[in-house]
Length: 156
Image (cartoon, rainbow, N blue to C red):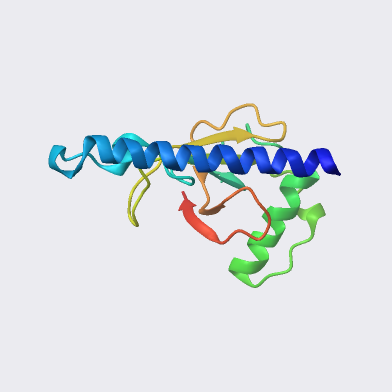
């Protein structure tokens, strides 16, 4: 326990030293030279952030996961039920080879993004899909990778 307390004090001392060094640099550069704090240091939280999501690519020409891959069939059934207010049985979707379950990942640059900005999204097949070519990504919410994150963006 004592070692842990010592480590915490050392980390605190390093932070104080870092703040003092930044203050000294600001004093040396001075406002007359037009230096910005961001030119001299970086604030915590000003790094790139990753957004993630899982969804369906539809409209594949027989190259999808196939109806035997349950992790794809379940969300497809739920999607149909929510959009058409219809109860479809998973067994009824056993021949659906035009759908693939995918993972999505997008990186928000350190400079940030504003509402309406576009981000590149990396899409990876999770199941047995042979190809995603020609398919269309059904709109998918993107969130931060930690639990209970709010929806930050929508990929489609």
